[in-house]
Length: 216
Image 1 (cartoon, helix red, strand yellow):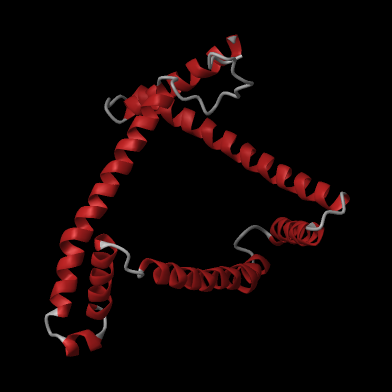
Image 2 (cartoon, one colour):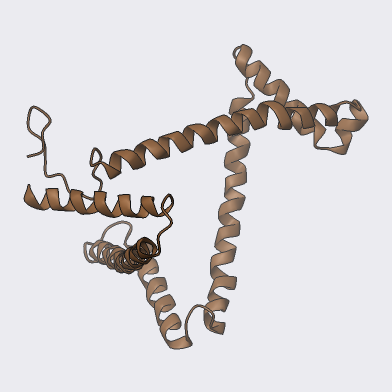
């Protein structure tokens, strides 16, 4: 319980200090916050190495256990070892060998994933375009108007389609986007306040709860 109280107090104090920097103009406060941010960067770097070690351990265990997915784990470990070795020997991420890895392996894989995403979007669009009620009918109508308004053929069918498309983007779409952004901002603010005041404690490991919902 004492260690949990210390971790919550430290998190609240650091969070309030960093937050106060945006409202109070003080050189000493800026220096303290910059030092805290530097410490956080170091901790994040160590967390990255721990995540890498955990990933390697997980896939090594899978290979040793002769899992059905051990081939993929072996490929991942080999690629990881080769990339790290090239990065250490070649002189960092800007070295020619590392650039070759990025241009010949990573970028084609990203292009392939985005190509697959297009098929998922197509199937989702087909399911969404099935008219079942008034709301789905309005969705289909607006979608068709936007799609036709984006193409030269739409202006040939009806010269007002591009103007209607612009109105859809400028009024209902923009209003909905702003509403979503406001909701996300309020949710982020509420989550930050809950973390700052110790209501939510993602940095504390919960060992369990009793029948009344209290931490054990």
